[in-house]
Amino acid sequence: MSTGLRERAAAELARTRQRSVGLTDAVDDDDLVRQHSRLMSPLVWDLAHVGNQEELWLVRDVGGREPVRADIDQLYDAFKHPRGERPALPLLSPAQARAYVREVREKVLDLLDTVELEGRPLVEQGFAFGMIIQHEQQHDETMLATHQLRVGEPVLVAEPPPRSRAIVAGEALIPGGPFEMGTSLEPWALDNERPAHPVDVPPFFLDRAPVTNAMYQAFIDAGGYGDPRWWSADGWAHRQEAGLSGPAHWHGDGTYTRFGRREPIVGDEPVVHVDWYEASAYAAWAGRRLPTEAEWEKAARFDPATGRSRRFPWGDDDPTPEHANLGQRHLSPAPAGAYPAGASPAGVHQLMGDVWEWTSSPLYGYPGFRAFPYREYSEVFFGDDYRVLRGGSFGTDAAACRGTFRNWDYPIRRQIFSGFRCARDPRPGELAD
Ligand SMILES: [Fe+2]
Image (cartoon, rainbow, N blue to C red; front, top):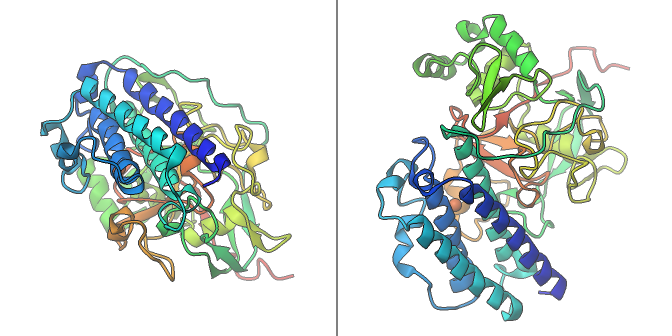
């Protein structure tokens, strides 16, 4: 591993830890050990789990060092204990968890300087370090979602997102034909993003912006939550059982709660905290549908000028604050039109950042998929139980987000920062020249 790569890994580890510390130092010890929702772990579990994964992969596996705390592996194994059970476990206290993650990190920085990193796929181009950085960032987003569910005085602060700088509405035509989906080159891409493979996508239309709060309010006002015509059988059953009447955290009086602050709903901001059934029902009501995962990725990466798939809608450069609302710089999605520099060649905006976008697709491995470095990263989730989300949210860090990055969750979940945009097929004769 080159000096540049070592420096980058160290800098990303430090930047990521700063975020984890911010999210956990923002509340007192009672709040850290409390379960704010059955869907979430106590924040102190996330913190120690991040350290435990770092210990397992970097200290023990990559570094070949002695365990720091082999006795706690069980407690922080996400597969051994579902979230609902975690508060009852004999977890490390907040002070112990902080000391533990610091100790692990010291060992990692020590071995990063010297460890031999040639000849093992796990460490090629710093993959294991990238994986652990992404893992911590993913838990930071999870902790941010826990903060949204937490009841109490607001504790997080951030600048408001940028204003809209361009009117972005209507739809863009994405030309038909093959494109390269997934990646074989991106060094820190995870197993489920690999390998690159051709996919033929017929022409389709895609919304230029995510569905906004005002658009979604029109669906509610039209009685969308009371009309089974727009819902799948499963979706309707869930809507009734869960008593859904609007996005999570909406109060039905034009206000919503954001990280403990009750505020008027901003109309041109992408709707967030809707589940897959709600997104699908809106799309049906609007005479549209959700895009498939391949459609979404083609819209985000395909460059018609060269026929090449790029890393991001705007090109191959890493995201900057001009491109996308990522990394918890703001505590909400930005209004449609806030990121003209991040638009795709076809004029599709805000594909990256703001809200995770539901697609119609279940999660499966790509042709040629190989589990790496362990089956539990994604292979065990393949199947029809989950739906894929793309593009990252305002709470997703750039290190854990790419044009190829795939997220997934159950269709009933909406504690995540989930929104959507709609697609449709061309009408007969619409594309005739
Ligand atoms: Fe994890």
